Image 1 (tube, rainbow over the protein chains, first blue to last red):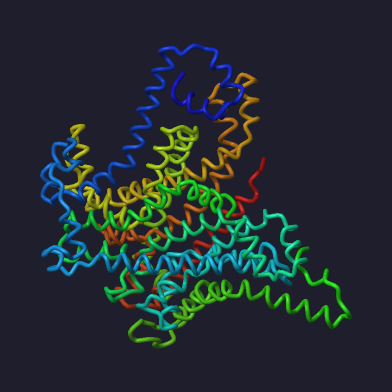
Image 2 (cartoon, rainbow over the protein chains, first blue to last red):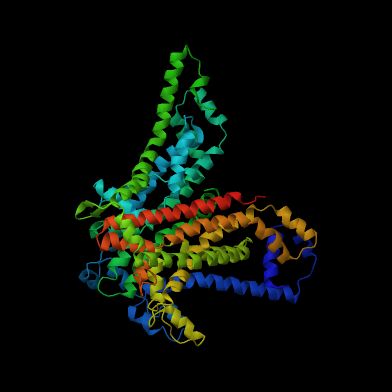
Length: 315
Length: 307
């Protein structure tokens, strides 16, 4: 039995299917063990293939720069793991060390900008998308389907390919090079509306009918009944929105010209490579730019996966 | 239907009409902010680009002469624009099928729930939540001919140092490989959700009938997964066609224009050459291509036989 058979077998007999019971009767043979070992090796290889670059980046950020290059050949554990630990790269990018001040590096400012913009977008978009999703999922309105098509069709507008046109409009509105320009275009999203709609549709309607009898208005119904019941969906969408805005690159790159307003992702590309590339600083900057989303993901993984499966499959 | 004015006790038609229009008005306020957003930030840009594409237009100089369709004619005969479309097409054709294949393999291996697969799933998904720019900067260091991690790893198996991003024949494949690495976890999650959505009875029935595991995979699991795979193909094609960040961060379109994807070329025209008119015309052409592709793929999608 090859490994492929085993994998296919996993699928053929999911969880505690009837096939698994039959297999338990058989004693574990050396073949099973070999197969198990093969699977474990495959898992380890997969794990390393996706994590080694991140380990290299993280450990490279907490060692002296010369050490990164000195231990490159031959490839040993020293290539990845530091021998001497050092926080100098972080002191540099936050402008605390002399080197950092010499180059005028202020990553705290870029991090702050990214936080400000991300939080503003997440809060405003949750508010407005929830209102819109409630409208489409549960309110009556003439020609509501036409409006829905109007919303859904924006999903077909390719985002990166229409950034130049978006810039023309935002510039004409006087929002170029401003926080407003970074925030306003994203306060509503067709994907989030669509996903929240799916959640709200599944909530039984007799709940809000009872509320209407008690004299509650539409906003009360939304706030007291619908929002609490669609909380998992709202949290999921908040996460995805945060990640989307935090990782945004092209839009702040062209919108923002003054360094004071710059977001962290653009800063990594421009600040660390202005004169010459400092690998240690670039690693440190990349770590600070990635850590918030990676930590959020590791803690709230379940919501992420749900969100992608939901917007992915139904959207 | 719930919360409608029809069910409330009324005295005469005038009152019904008033209450109903009041209700509609309030309801409309719920959706109004979103509609304004989409009108201003999604639809208006397309109209603005259509207009700008008909004029000589730069950010600094504003609108110049009306040139009609000249700019469209110019870009369609511009060999660099055609080259950028070709590069984009190649990138998409390399990336999408390979990514779907790899994510399918990963999904099959990692679908079973246990501690080990949970670890590997998190690892596979980490590049997905990391920004494209961080991944691009990181990989351009890994691809570095003298100082890169990849050549160091290759030296373990005795392969001499290679050039990647500076090599005209390898730059685009190198970008593609990196982007597959970054995005494969995303499609894996969707495929895994698809796998879980297949009712277990189909596979169990086949096993009872004596089908070998690989036969189950080939004849039952994969055909039932076709819809989801098609969906991944469609969305990834649209994403891949708009590749920008890796080109910006890793190669700036070089070497020898071999990685100059269309969105990067548009950026170059609009913001480096300050020619917004031409950049708008290119955006419109790209938009049309993508609309045709997505509508075409959707049709394929819809005519697909469902189970």
